[in-house]
Structure formats: structure tokens, C-alpha cells
Amino acid sequence: MLDLETDELSAALSELNGKVTEDDPYIQGLRVARNRPGVVRVVLDLKAEVKPQVFTLPPVGEYGYRLVLDIYPAVPIDPLAALIEQTEKKPRQQEKPAEKVARLATIVIDAGHGGEDPGALGRHGSREKDITLTIARRLKDLVDAEPNMRALLTRDGDYYLPLQTRVDKARKVQADLFVSIHADAFVRPNARGSSVFALSERRATSEMARLLAKKENEADLIGGVNLQAKDSYVKQTILDLYQTATIDYSLRLGSSVLKRLGRVNTLHKPQVEQASFAVLKAPDVPSILVETAFISNPEEEKRLNDEGYQDRLARALLEGIRDYIAKHPPRPLPVAMN
Image 1 (spheres, rainbow, N blue to C red):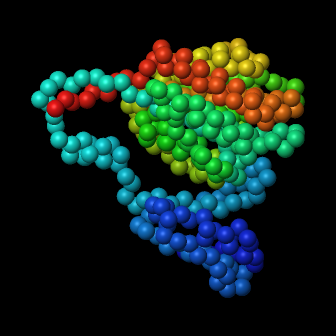
Image 2: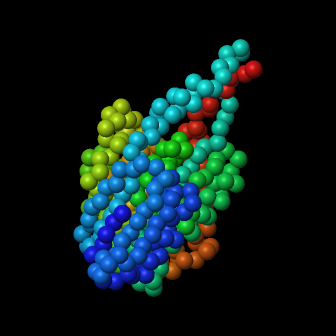
Image 3: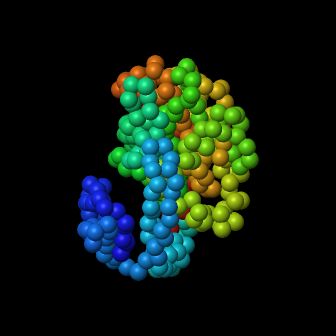
């Protein structure tokens, strides 16, 4: 139960009921009503015991002060323990030596921004979140048509997704590659060209890369993520051993994609750049962030809204991924024979 000191039962508060879906793991329902003069009460009906965390966020962009309520399970799920339990339940088949079989490469495609975070805005009203989702969907269709690949989208609609959640989704499906799609803006309207970025453990390779990473990482301020919460991956020291190798493979993927993008659009920089992008921090998934073009450039904004150009961009991304997979195919899985 949460009491808000306000004289107004706003439309945003009144519509909260419809925001809870049936498959929500923790919330059964939500009720909002005026409790007494000057107080609006929000009541959450829960499905299980939870640990709530309430915090405030300062104004950022077009948003004012905000109150955020995060709900965590009282007993956190241990994915490793669940995996071990599942493995132990499987019948063991050791009658014949295991043989290797090929598998599909899983490509997670991340459409940048979404929901209350529109991303960069073009001079003619284009929103980065719409452009990125359109290109992501086109790329998914192309990847799914490949015989040795499958694609998954981090979001397939206009809703906000925290940066860490995007990373978590890629790790949970054991993605082979993670490709985040963007179309950023710059203070100068003549800035143009495509760019590809990989993670840097140290410093950005250019001032623009540093500023871009800072801007993209601030998406969680708009979406209302508690930046004081501890990153669970930081505690898993062993994952740090993967990071250097993962960055190396990310750079290889980035180079393949950048080469193909150069046949569709001018390149802003001729090499893959690096910066500390939060969305690229999966320690065991090669990850890149692609700036398809500058939406702040009127000419590039127009092209980004052209279906033919969107298709050429998506195909260039596919070809870059295909080039990388040809050199670094996913490891085959061992399958026990009966």
C-alpha cells in the first residue's frame, strides 16, 4: 500500500490498473482511489512475498521528480541451482560415445530505447525508438531466413526496457551474439555516417564515443531504474575472466559489420570504436552497438525513414553477422546416443 500526497487523481494514476498483465510474476492486481482529501492510495495485491524498494529520481529531460517502487522476490531465484537440479533429473545416457551436432547461432537483436524513452529526435519529428524497432524487425526476419541462425528481439513493441534487462535477456537465452541498434543525434546537424562500437574496459577511443556512451547509459534515468542497486555480475568475479576474450570477439564482429555498412552509408569512423556502454557488458556474449546513422542530420533522417534504405541497412547487418559466423561458428553441442 502506498499513500501519495496529492489533490489530483491524474489520468496516469487512474490507468495504472491496466498496466498489470496476467503473467506478472509478483502482482495480482492494482487499485488506485482517493483515500481522503489530499491523499491518493495505491494498493498492490501480490502473488508472493516480496521485498519492495522505494526511491526518488531527480528531473531529467522532459521528466520531473519521480517516485519509483521496485519489487524483488523475497527469496531470489538461483539460476545456477535450478540448472544443476534440472541436469540431475535428466536420465544419463552413456551407452555410446557422444557425437557432436551443429546448432543454430542465436542472435539477440536489441532495438534501442522505447516507451517513455524516445531516444534521439530528428528535426522532422522522427523518433529513434521507432527507427530502431523497424530496423530490428527487418533484421530479425532476415536472420530467421538463414538456415543456420535464429533471432530474438529484446523488445518487439513500444515499451521501456532497462539496459541491464537487455543484457540479462541475451545471457538467459545463451546468445551467441548481441546487436544493439541505434540512430543517434549530435549537436552539429552535419554530423553523419554509420558507426559500430564495442565495449571498452578502460577509456573511450574518442570524445564522441565517450559522450555517446554517457548519453545511452542515461536511458535508465529516464526509465526509472535504481542506479544504487548492486550489479549482480560485479559480484561474480569469475565472469571477469571472460570479458577480455569477449571484447576481442566483439571487435571482430564489429569489423565485419562495419565493412558491410560502408557499402550502404558513409562511415563516421573507419574502425570499430570502444566505450563503456552498459548494454554491451554481458561478459560472455560478443556484443556490438550499431549507430545506423545520425537522426539529427536531416538528410540521414529522411533516409532512415525510407523502407528501401531500412532494408539495405538490415541486409548489411545480416551480411556482417554472416561473415562473422562463417569464421566463428557456434560450438556444437554434445548429444548422447542411445
